[in-house]
Amino acid sequence: MSRDWCSQTEHGIRLAVQITPNAKRSEVVGVLDDVLKIRLQAPPIEGKANLALTRFIAATLGLPKGAVVLMHGQTNKRKLLEIHAPQLTLAALRQALLPE
Image 1 (cartoon, one colour):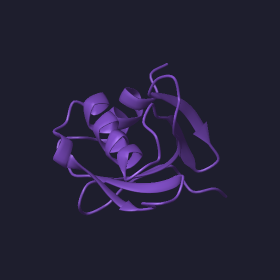
Image 2 (cartoon, helix red, strand yellow):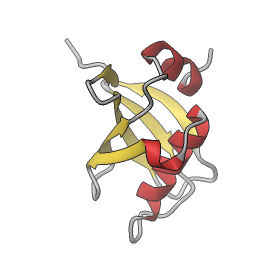
Image 3 (cartoon, helix red, strand yellow):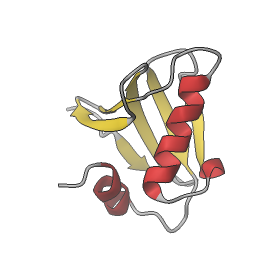
């Protein structure tokens, strides 16, 4: 049984992602196993990709930049984010990041 890429926590929503830096544009690719794959336009230098990731997720969800926090994976392609937005539901998050 694989873990889900997003889950509700007491502080908000936890989001597992895998990034590919240096892409032509920033975009959500889809779900692979237990992570959400995201391509980022930013290079993986001096935290630029991490900053681009949190800003991209916040903008996609219509949240302030500070609502998305990188919890784990500062130097790894796999990262764990926490989204602090009491009004955001798992269903709304899935719809915003993976529209059909």
